[in-house]
Image (cartoon, rainbow, N blue to C red):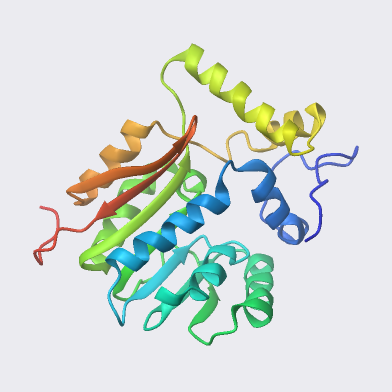
Length: 248
């Protein structure tokens, strides 16, 4: 795993992009920037083992380097499931494919390049959006989630993890400090943290927990429950109504 030092040098980028440079260090970046990332993947496996059905296709939209798909596809509960990762970054998809060839040890995991906001999505049993919605233009998020709802079978799952914005300014500041402390504990310098925060300005646009819940409910999901939270990060489980009808 290559170490992330993208924002350590004088030539660090001023805007964050999912290019080849980021793809090569993305796994290290995730582990050192997103608290309990591996735990969320483990819990996702538990949810699939409980709610997925044999024959289901599991989509990871915004799959980046494919870590989630590769780890899930190797679990015992993955027998009978198909895993498809989709990302619009050619560099990310290329690395995901290499990773699957080296580590998955299974032929039920594949990756494809595409724009998840416009592509047609075949019938799905599970859709995973791990830290993806926050990079989608806010004005199209409602329609995007509505499209995902329609693609899911009755009883299908949407698993969504996001960084959160907090309404209370004091809480927002304190949680930001906790996150910065976490990253410092993972070896990032104050300068790296500051530069990356500036590079993500207007690129990563988080919503509040209530706003994310409201979007999911507006899309048609009647069951929306958080299954993990760490200060300003949260993971939500949304289940499509088991009766075969969509939102009004």
